[in-house]
Amino acid sequence: MQVIDLKARYGDRYRVKRDECGDQLIPHKWGHFYAHSSTELACFIEGNRKFKLINKQFPEIRITQRGDEEIIFVFDPALFPGIAKALKASRRVRYSPEALEKKRALMLEARKHLKAERLRETSADLFAPTTNSELATSDGLQNP
View (cartoon, rainbow, N blue to C red):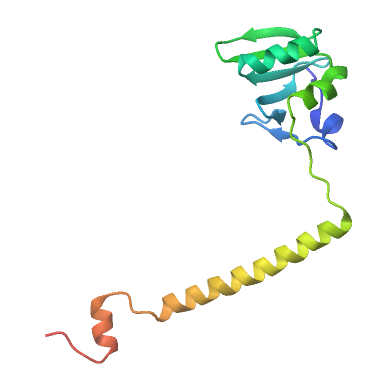
């Protein structure tokens, strides 16, 4: 069965991740959205209080599973923008070209610094004595 491709449909605006079995999902503050079928999306929510607010705003949703602390409901993709906003879905971060270049420069500088620090640590470890016997022999003293 073909399901809705979340990355193609919403990937430009929302962060799309993959779960353990490779299915696409869009995380939100209380759970995640996922493709239920070729015509519907589903939402997993932990906590019944938030669901009551969503249910009042969007009476068209259909509950498919209700647990003690979690709810799964199905809805039409046309409702996704409103539900995503209400549940604070994870948005993609967009940077301007200038901000992106600044971040790249900062990362390069941090890499240089980290590389130099690792090199200093490695060289210090190579030349530092590690045991008491090495300390004694490095000073020219012999243990009786």
